[in-house]
Image (cartoon, rainbow, N blue to C red; front, top):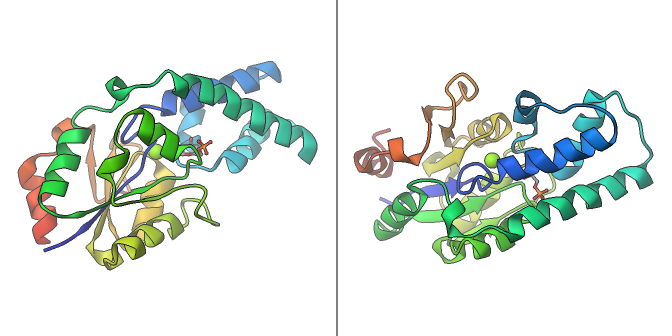
Length: 219
Ligand code: BG6
Ligand code: MG
């Protein structure tokens, strides 16, 4: 039986959520307001452009398009300096084990990320070749929680959405997977990701027998 396994990137494969957070926090601080880690939960899975709008709303800040475009560039440049220093040691625990197991079982494996930096990050941590295809922020018109990114992923694999399984760390991403009619697996805290079909703190908690059950359609 062949299933499609769709992996989000930031916060699922690599711990880049902390770098996104730092870059947004520095921007907020430079504009004179705070940005907390709790507020950052709302930014996970959300596009860069939408994230800036939410940040400005949180800070009660209004700005013109030109100014916003400048901040978007500034935030991404800072983020890129963080990711330039990344290597395979920043891959989250047991992600390679799960990827290798699924590939060995000849399952479909694609990336489904909102990030426009997904390809360079995967190359930097040497996981690029583990994916049959990549769908990222450059390929979609509607951001998560819209299911578009995952539906394109299923199409690329030529596997029906109901036979796809999504790994996600964000509330928006879990909603997107559910809206796509896929099985959603939250990676993170149960309190945050309670809409997911299954939640694990990280991949070390995901056993081979659980993956086998997913492949067999028993989950
Ligand atoms: C998502 C992250 O994966 O990608 C968000 O969870 C981020 O925090 C979004 O804003 C867009 O990423 P990028 O790299 O294109 O700015
Ligand atoms: Mg994520």
